Length: 290
Image (cartoon, rainbow, N blue to C red; front, side, top):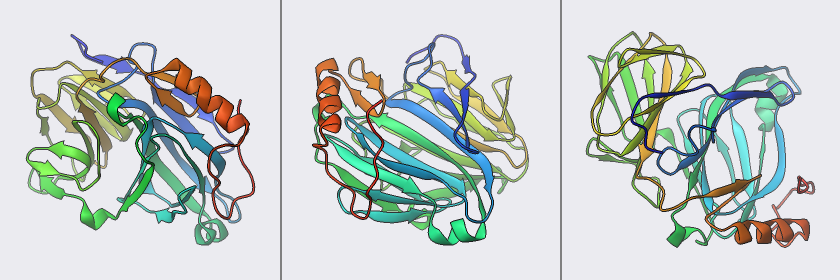
């Protein structure tokens, strides 16, 4: 979504059994930022020994899910047969395309010991030409992602996905985009360039001054196009900077489905109700259609 003035978004908060989730996108004032159509901030949450998250198998179409953690671990399983633990700094990118089913649970070791979970889960709408792509899942360890420091080491940046500043993430994306994870050791300044038409800044922890607009943890600022933006995170802050080219048309979101076609979403509903999606090996549960 293009804006002429900075747009401040206050996420909606939900308590999911001890895990606080803040949802910044979609928002009534901003349905998307570039191809990013859904933005959830999980935690931070502390789980006692024996506790954890258990997101039962559920379906997706027409999107890619992006999971990035600051703390903790999650085990991903899907109907392709993938099973992968994700830990801080890694990226899980799941392309749903024509349809995939996955579950997310706390790994056995973390569940037994007790742990803290903190991270971001984001959906990227696929371009219309790729909405029915063959489903894929790819895990990218932190060491494989472009990472660098700025402001004499005060800022650490990792390119989670897309292209930025002449760097390219190995994550397979389908449209022009960028997703930067920024961590500040001390307060310093970062110039976010204007190479992407739509951009936003989200503060996961700490705070930030974005061209004079003060943000606290849990706030998102959607930025106007066309000019660099001065981002000054506070010490120990964690930020997500992201955006890309505008979507190639409107998208409908219903439950876990994203599509440029309302009819396609109705078909996905019918397919899940009839259990025509694939099964996740090792899983016997599933989330019913709402």
